[in-house]
Length: 102
Image 1: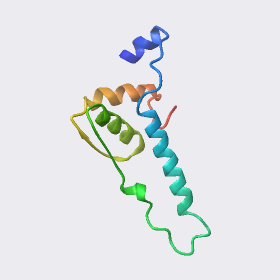
Image 2: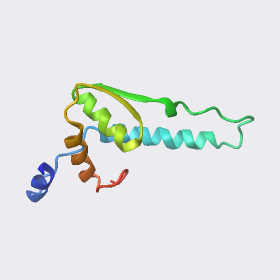
Image 3: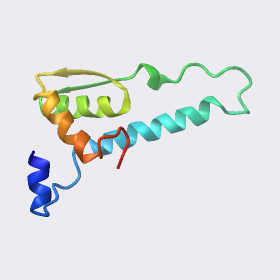
């Protein structure tokens, strides 16, 4: 794979474009989870907004949205993205073959 070739040459590709988005989504998830169990809430907290969120994108943005959605369980609508299987497999390898692995 391209990843294996770069690693064999001890080259790093730098941060992937999806990583800041995945990190942001995870921060929002943990903040919403903490807010939902707040003991100060006088009544049940409504379903957090992020449960119905959708990522969208076109072309490269569609690919970033698809990979981010696959790693975080978020909904996605992508228009004319590059092949998802190849993109996701590459990033799955980069993350150690586990969701959320760094």
